[in-house]
Image (cartoon, rainbow, N blue to C red; front, top):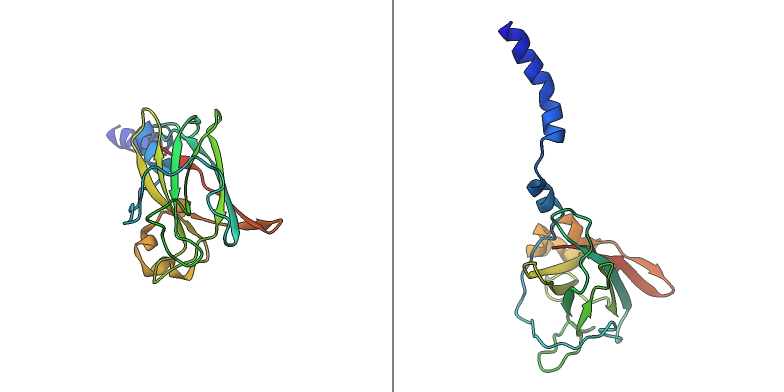
Length: 181
C-alpha cells in the first residue's frame, strides 16, 4: 500500500509544479532588470518627447506595468532618459540628449531621439531612471540586438528583455521596451 501512495504522490508532482507556484517568482520573472547608472546622470532634464534630433532618428515606445501581476498599467510614471550624442559624448553642462517623459493613463510612453553610437568598448545604449508613486526607483539601460560590443562589457549580463530589436519605418528606427516595476 505504501508503494502505491508513493507512486500516486509522484504523479501529482507535475500538477504541483504548474498550479502550486506563488506570485513572487512570477513577479521576479517580469521585473525589469536594474543596471548601472553610470557616471553621467544629471537630474533636472526637461519634460519632452523629442530628446535629440542630430543623428539617425529612433523612437522607443512601451508600457510601464506592475511586476506583481505583469499586466496592470502604471499611469504617471516618470522616465528620465539620457545617452551620448552622435559623437559619443555626454553633455554634462546642459540637457542635450537628456529628457523626461511620463506614462499616460494606460501606462504607455514614447520618445524620439537618436540611435546613439557605441564608444570605446561600450555598446549602443540608452540610460533610464523610472519613478512612480508606490514603487522603488528603477535605474537601467536599454541595449540593441546585433551590437558587436554587447559581449565586450558588463552589458553581456543584460537580460534578453533589455536587448531590443529595431525595425525601420519611414526612415525612423523603432523599438519596443516595456518596463516592469
